[in-house]
Amino acid sequence: MIELTIVIPVLNEAKNISLLIPKIDQIRKNLKLKKFEILLVDDNSNDSTEFVVRGLKKKYRNLNLFIRKNKQKDLSKSCILGFNKAIYKNILVMDGDLQHHPKYIPKMLKVFIGKKCDIVIATRDFQKKVELSFLRKTFSKMLIVIINAFLGNKTKDPMSGFFIFKKKIFFENRKKMYGKGYKILADLIYSSKKKLIMKDITINFDRRIKGKSKMNFKILVILINFIIEKYIKSIKYHLNKNN
Image (cartoon, rainbow, N blue to C red; front, side, top):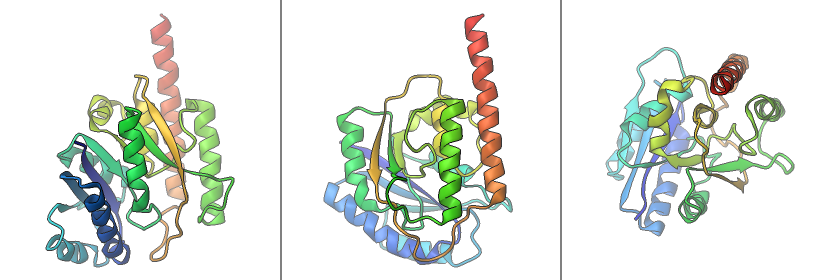
């Protein structure tokens, strides 16, 4: 029987969370998941996210809320807090803005279990219409090319925020991780020196209905620094291995 923790990092997503949680719970019922929990990690929102989640907790008993009381907003740190708090050995990460539709969770789990994967990634197909702003789409495509060129091509979308993985991958590699920024998947993948069994499934990336994207120039700089650091560590690792 599959056991699953869903980690959802959020920041000012009060209007979206109230729509998302019922959708996820319906998927749980359809799949008859018994060992299941949802961990919402709030990056100290200044809207009514906390109030909304506490209201939802009255109905959804396997929903838990953790708040990062920190002035510096950081999605990766929110995810890592969720990973550390997760009860179950399989973790699914998704955004709280409704751009990652829960309807894909059954397919992700089917591939994850059936193919005995370490990680299954819901990837965006940039050849088709993707509901992203021109700037964000351009940044995403550019960074994927850079990551594949410098760190290796391991998935079509290392920038995805929608994926399922074995929790042990995090605990085996957390000391090697960059540990900050907005793309925790890439950090997990490129921190591991073991060969991971990974599968991609293509999804339609939904349009954000409420709220606004967190992407900005500061986040882009952090991502570039992450790539540089991982590239340097990769060179050092291979040099030491060959000596």
